[in-house]
Image (cartoon, rainbow, N blue to C red):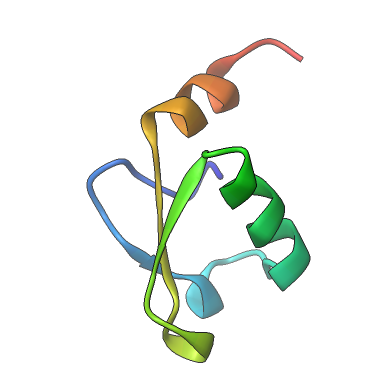
Length: 58
């Protein structure tokens, strides 16, 4: 999630760390990311709740 931005769509297949379909669907269900497109052209972007989750203490 640290490679994502609130205002910029990133192609999921081009992220520096491979993101599996299961992982992406889970964090989408949490509301941390938004999807756009399909299959290999899927773009993702961070949401406000995702930014808050990323910045929270573990």
